[in-house]
Image (cartoon, rainbow, N blue to C red):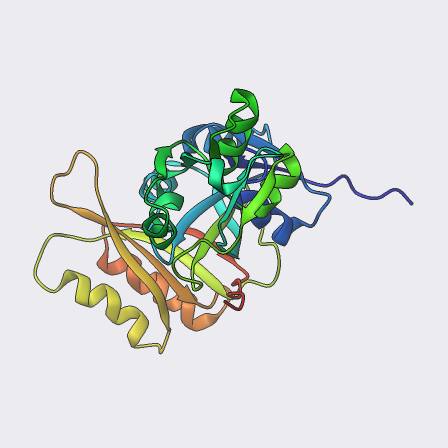
Length: 281
C-alpha cells in the first residue's frame, strides 16, 4: 500500500526558522515546506491552492501578537485547522572555523535580537544587525562568507546551512513560546476540536462589549484570549479576536455564538481546532 503524500506547508521566512519546527510538530518530519518571503505571500500561497496549509505565527509570550497576521486573518478566506506552540530557544552560530572572539556583528530578526539582551550586555563589542528572518541570517553568513559575524537562530538552522553553534540558550527568558495557526481553505480540523477562534465587531455604544462577553459567561465558557484590532475605514472602531474553550459542535458553544450574532454587527468563526499544549520550559 502506498503512503499518502505528505502535505505541502507554507511558512514565512527561510528553512530552519521556528516556523519549520512548528510544521514538524504538527505534520511530522516528512512534511514538505514552501518558504515565503512575507506574510502576505504566505496567505496567498494557501488561498490560491499552491500549498495545502499555511503556518502563521500569531503570538509570542514575550513580544505579543503578530499584528500583520491578525490583520490578514480578518481579510482572508483561510480558516484555522490547528495550532502549534513552540518553545523559542536562540543559538549563536557562525561559519566553520569562526570563534566567538572573532565575531563583531550579529545578524537576526529584530524580535530575536531583542530577546537576547542579557547576551549583548555581556558582549558590548557586538553590533546588532537586523534582518528579515532568523534562519535567513545564517544563510546570509554563508552567502557573504562572513568571518567576523554570527547569527542568532534556532539550532536546526546550523545543520541546514553548515554553520557551527557557538552558544545556546541565549534567550533572556526560558518561558518564551510562539503560537502558530495552521490555516487552510476548508478549515478541516487536524484532530478533535476543543478550541474556537472567532472575530466580532459591535456597535460603539455603552455596554456593548459587556453584552458580548456575557454570552460566554452565562454559559460558563472559558475565554482563553481577547484582543482588539482597529477596523480599516472606520476610525476608532475595533474588531475583537477571541479564543474560547469548546467547539460549535457543543450545544452551549453553539448557543453562545448564536447569541453573539444577536448583539454584534459582525461575527466570523475563524475555526474550531485541537488545542495545542505548551511544552515545558
